[in-house]
Amino acid sequence: MIQDRKLIEIALLFFKLGCIAFGGPAAHIAMMEDEIVTKRKWMTQEHFMDLIGITNLIPGPNSTEMVMHCGRDRAGWKGLFVAGISFIFPAVVITGIFAWLYQKYGELPAVEPFIYGIKPAVIVIIIMAGYRLGKKAIKNIQLAILGIVVVLLSLIGGINQIVILLGSGMIGVIFFFIKNKKEGLLTILPFSYLKLFDVTGISNSGIFLTFLKIGSILYGSGYVLFAFLDTELVSMGWLTRQELLDAVAVGQLTPGPVLSTATFIGWQINDIQGALLATLGIFLPSFLFVMILTPIIPKLQKSKKIRAFLDAVNVGAVALIVAVCIQMGKETLTDWRAICIAIISIAIVIVFKKVNSLYIVIGGALIGYVLHYF
Image 1 (cartoon, rainbow, N blue to C red):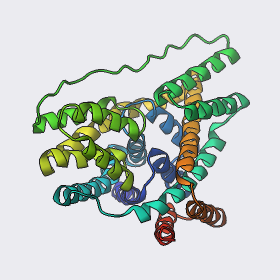
Image 2 (cartoon, rainbow, N blue to C red):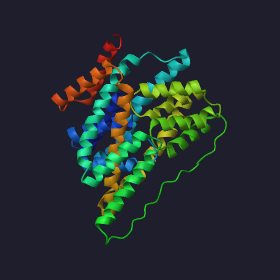
Image 3 (cartoon, rainbow, N blue to C red):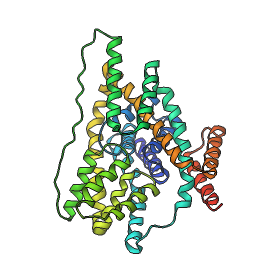
Image 4 (cartoon, one colour):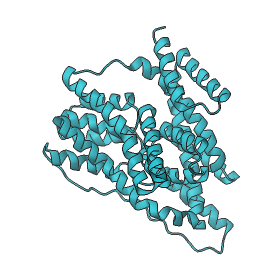
């Protein structure tokens, strides 16, 4: 009975987040931290940070894998699947509707006025989560310096996120050995990129295997996903570049994981069958990675050497969130309307410390819709 209640809680929470989580992985994780750690206290801040650090080191959509980890922690293996499916489902349905409309009418619905107001509100949500996570992650002056360096490297650009995080972890291990000279050396195996499949020809199996490959080796942000799609689909003639650009737009317009873009693209290639197979292919590896990783997390956390590695990776992950926030701010806060929405959102968060992220998102959308026409 208790287990069933937990599963219902998980389903409702992550379905809600799947409906309102605009702004990419940083925003999704910010909302999760607020709901799971601050409000519901399902886990400690430190454990949440460890999950962020570990999730950043495996392929796949970070926020979706974080959802699965949180579901597993709360209600076992059933919780993993219920959380993941509940979070993915709204994005897939919304993207599927966009895909059908696009195929039928050749253009996307006009929802830009609402998105205009959501973006500044989401930035505020990320700022608050970054602040809370940073307070817990930065345990000493060395980690504080490391965080500043990672923010600067991220803003400069040109360095892969996984390289930054692994580099942060290595530096953390070096700090550990400097403090504990008697300890033995720790070997950390680098991640390898494997070319899993070569798929030619448009077929249902081809669609599934192509997106399975992408889901198995994808690191980084949604923009990395679009680079993969350009290589795998446009160059193969499965998709036009304009359709890919429109798919990018859908990824920005819809809440939830940006990998739901696969639903849109699959639909353009082979209607609803293509949409379902592309969606299954791109998300399936995440479920498998989390299932394999989950049992070893407690053992990793008990090792002092791995603890030093994770502490540094956690700081790197928070620094990446800060960098994303700065970049989003530069792109979004470009006029008085967006700045006004951001200031109102900050004021609401400061005055009403436990305000639900849903209200901030909805409020930003409504204010954005009004101000967009001024």
